[in-house]
Image (cartoon, rainbow, N blue to C red):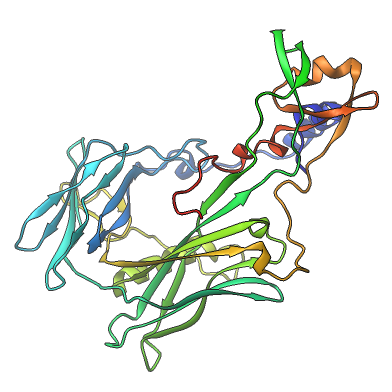
Length: 384
């Protein structure tokens, strides 16, 4: 249930006391490894053999830290060809290093080589180029339990075998409630008046999320190097992402066996832990090694390969009419604010007047009417 500051005030005392009681029941245990982790260099990305290479450099941070991991800035980052030239990547924004689009020679080997601002030197081994085959099929289907995004691919040369997929979802977020009033501040937050709304909230925003799960397929045990009818994403019949218009961009990458095993271990470490019967965590570093100090470790695996991408759209009108598709705004509370409480309630920007009602004003919380809290008001360039 979504709640605003106003609705919290109605039961704030009880909630506050309950929070104090619960907080006193347990003390958090934070091992020193979590509180003070080593400042390992983290390298995220790959060398793109058919396009621009983008690498993100950061430092490992405390798991409980509220901020994002600190970016590793002012490093000198290169993609080097064995026996050939090197190309330096440009930093923008901080911690993100990018090259111009290039096509690498598939007969050559390449590596990442970087030096941090503090003088630590890191590199991978030289690796051959892995070329990703195209999609054979890419589409969606409506099944009784929801929407399935599926794909197929193959390598006629029987040389790929190791596949990984990532996806990025985008959807329309449209509030159900449209206010007709606003609180005009005159002398202070609680000193104002209600007027017809002038600064209207956006009527539509676009939510966006990248995949966090790791999608892998190994075809080495199959008679042919074929991926058939692989479901890369599944959404239930109630998913709010399908409420209006939904889009997904899927990236397909072929990998070396070493890179595949790195992601396989990462998947086990991050997704399959929780019971005594799940695989236990293993030490995971990757292929980035420190040349200036062998004791210094880095996290990440930088492979050399191309990628293939496909995008599709799904309209609500294309889905079964009896699907009970929810909305991000279905559980938004509304209540009548008594006239005497209007200045106190709407003095908080989290509380939004909707329309006049008997004995007061119907109100809700900002997250129920402001879609900017659920996405971006900027229409994506690929959106129809």
